[in-house]
Image (cartoon, rainbow, N blue to C red):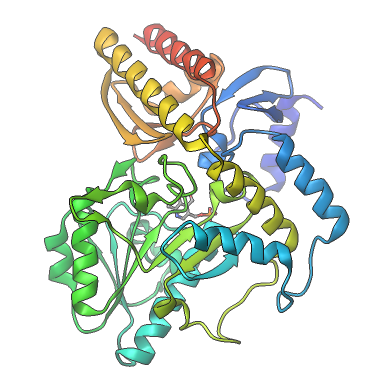
Length: 402
Ligand SMILES: Cc1ncc(COP(=O)(O)O)c(C=O)c1O
């Protein structure tokens, strides 16, 4: 079957959720992906910030093979050493006390919303169920997470959504204060809005949210699904947002994507006060916390936390940003560069769809963030020379398009 046949037949029998790419991906190795015609791409999409260790990482392969032979699944009510080990890593390397394992980002958000609302119901009153989210937010596609995603306002066909969700202006604490009332249970925020256009939160804005939540006894949720697990150069995203008073700790963080490096696994991590609200029979999942997913997550997280790993990611980040700034100076086609760690957004004067397609033709895969931003989220272990290769492709593509 040719690539075109595969694309056509896929379109015929799959629900139409994404615009099809013109090539069919076949396999990956390190920071490279290869299509079915053998063409090589440097993967600056990484499954949208998923393949933190690149493709076919030997340690991941070893863990998957070994664990699949030993025990892939067991009823969620059993403890396993794989589940304990993965949870311990999350707790030992964060401000959190309790872990709930899920299979995806949206499920981590659902768990966080349920946790915050149950805590508020039991501690602040039965009507305390309102949630403040932000304009341009993205938290997922199931009903709870879609309800706190601003896009709900342009997708009336899925209504009714959760009641009591209000959208404040991102990076504007006064707009949050205006929405606070005695029924506010939680505030949910992305440290860098990913899908919304790669917009970083101001550290002082996050600190303001913390103060508001402390004052009104409200649960502060950070959606770190795209930004966490080393993506911003720190293990948790909240560690990257420091003010003169230190970092802002949320009460709950939602994780997925990079945590499994491509294997579907997620987590909600919570401070004891809020995490304890979930009790036996009030929430759960068949697959969440299964031994295979937890063994892979342990391997990926241990690698990210290993000596020098994040230092290296931060060096490559600085190199990439510097290189992009040089291209900006010489080509004047780049209007803005923003982001942190290996989550970098580039605004250009070109149509984003045309730019992505031209980059793909030249051998670089990347994604779109927001309406017009080029999003670069390479594997965290990318080498300097590979980053240099990507910069050359970007430079060449911008010149060709000029
Ligand atoms: C910030 C954020 N939250 C939630 C999600 C949803 O995650 P998933 O697609 O795994 O359900 C995403 C996915 O892009 C995300 O970027």
